[in-house]
Length: 104
Ligand SMILES: [Zn+2]
Image (cartoon, rainbow, N blue to C red; front, side, top):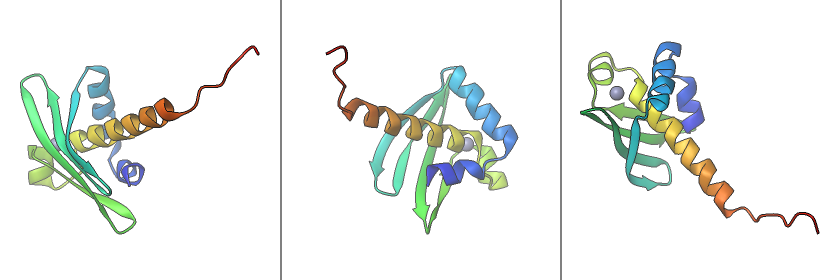
């Protein structure tokens, strides 16, 4: 769902989300369940609410920023939230992986 959604974000907004990641934007997840995630993207004094939901085989998303509300596009905050969730899921999978005993 998240990968599919990210594929629909245009290059410029995707790039700005990556830049935000490098600049230390924060993703604060408020609710996470199957096919649904809701939280806040925070940077500086700004805060935007993002909701990503599964719809069919893909996903749909909303953000409280002007770009998303007025233009109806997948904004940089949605892209950032999706990337953050993918990263957190990958980190969780890694943490649960059994460590191999080496040099035995
Ligand atoms: Zn936004």
